[in-house]
Length: 469
Image (cartoon, rainbow, N blue to C red; front, side, top):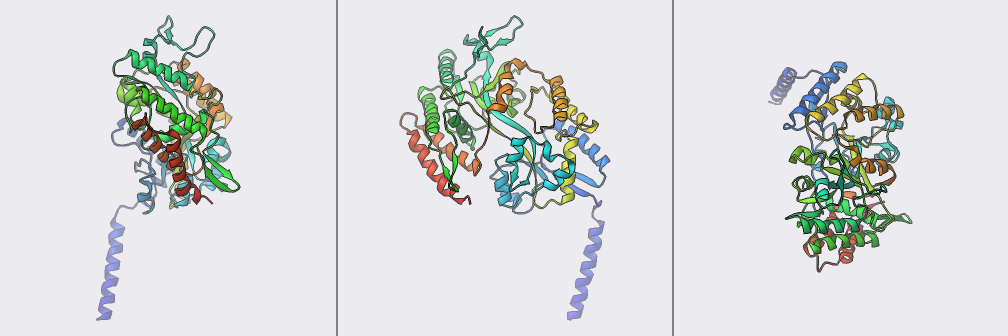
């Protein structure tokens, strides 16, 4: 009986092997691309299909597989714990440390060195993607936080004028900005908006999905806060209740008490394009990588907005929170998959290469963006290689389709103003600061900003910073 059972097992194994051999298996190295466009993005999909065809023609040992994945700290564990993350996907600059700790992404230093790219990465971005001397990602691009302003509304308030050609003039006779450069000026402009427009507000204050805390951190720096996480004798200490943070939250409280900000206790980063795009608010703090959204989603006129540097709260400090989007690689990706995924970046114009393939890809990206009616602005580059920068900037200037006068102050100052996000548990920090903002917005006349921040500071210290070794 035992011998018969063994024979049956052997027969079953042989049949299984034969069946597997009949399944489609072309012997190629598969690369799951997590940043592939979603189905609704038809023009982008067509562009990526063209790039895929070019890559697989030149590297026939590979097969690219579309596997769109929208990263979030809340959902990554479901894929990471089961080994189902795409080979390459996008995340935030704040995330590599936690993704490494959880075993979700891998070191790519050797592969990047072999391509000759390691020393071409922007220094700040490289530092944010390096842990214990090893590189864990390739930057796609960077962003700096600034102030979005609806120029049509600002013009209606007689704060700015128009030139003879119909463009807006953002400077006085001495060349000084007419747009707000301080938080107090934002308050004054917000009062003018409420007094002169029906059902409109000066600014949108975010407070949900960790976006409010993300922006409050930047506000705190600009009111004088030096750091929210401080290494004191080898121990990391939270300073969410720093005096500058209190002043920043008090500024939000003032707006809410006077009804100057949009009346919501749960606005997030998906809400600002609709609010500015429909003239519900005149101003919003955003990253320069998101400026196209009001235009592409809400038909906002690309010639009716400016993007200017972050204001100062104390008359001295002016910082722009600097972050970005890196490509990272699943922990279970093989060396061959990593090498292929890196090489594919050239085919989509996201590498420091400047050969014909790379330039054609960059140009393709610009032409599709133009066809979609997107505003094309300068970008904060991921690479510092001078040959690359000269070519990339020349091509970018060819396609810029907005009035650069409305953006030049931001791009002229961002490299001096940029400041990296806090080093540990940054997304958790933002979530706790959201709570403080929500409480102030919900109870503007009774909330105590200092008490709110002390509560969140204690939570951040005990739940997160105390875990840092």
